[in-house]
Length: 407
Ligand SMILES: [Zn+2]
Image 1 (cartoon, helix red, strand yellow):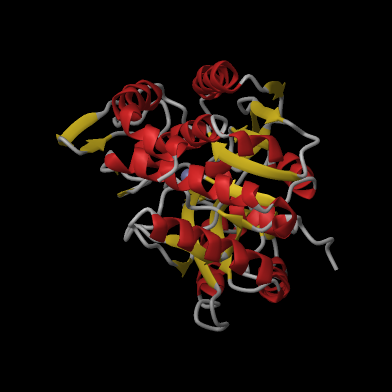
Image 2: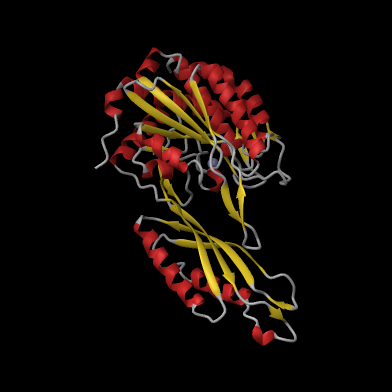
């Protein structure tokens, strides 16, 4: 093992201390102050240890539909861009998200030891552990003379858990100027890397009907909840009609009281796609179903939303990069391979912008997005070693990894 890689073994204690500190600051996506606190702490750590440039960007607010169908603007935390050697022959883009899925009102705010190698806590795996792996790997890499051959940019974004609505344009723009992408999402539950990823879209359907007294004038009302029930049944029946496409209705609301015909209902749903052409098929189906609902007298349906993430497909450039990661992991004695997943992440965004990337370079753990989320602590150092070795290998032959212009 080269010296920068082996020297990482002394870092575990300090990494665990930082991890507990970061994880116990709530950074649910809509907790702007908490996300900013984590962003400030981390960007400070990056600047101090890596002597890099630092830019902080404000993002546009995120529009959320409340249970009564009204749109509300939510501010997002800031995005941080840290960079070094922008003129080096090979440019690597490393990304990680500051936010978690746990809001301020969640009961899950503290870390807890499960045994001497396992820590439970909000965001320990997804992905505060991964952010520390990224920092540690860059710090180790910077000890090597080969570091001069690579320039890098780190993006810490505040909104990945809601699909990166505010940071997507910056990710796409940065992706265009880099050759290789490294993302620090946790490993799959079996420790492997994610290969292909499904695409994803989030939608909100709002139905307006006509309110009326439930007893005196029931016949004058047009029931928005009943129309929504028909709509949901119809879109749910799209499941199984096209290979790899799933539709999940996740939230439904409507009505105020039982003695009124409800004039309002709304639902939110998520669609996953396997290939790009699936998006058009879904849009056509949604349009047809929407027209059926809209043809009912006194009922009107409005659909908001879009496919924020296209499927991540593995082309030759991705396969070459996955091969390199596999070789590096074999050298470290933990051989890895990759497998497809229905989940998506910023790796989808970077691929859509033509940047080959490996997006599960973060820690090993499990039960992410639940109150049982945990991390296997030895993976902090193991994964920092892996990323350091990948960077060193890229630096050995920078010209091999220069990105080919998009066809
Ligand atoms: Zn994540």
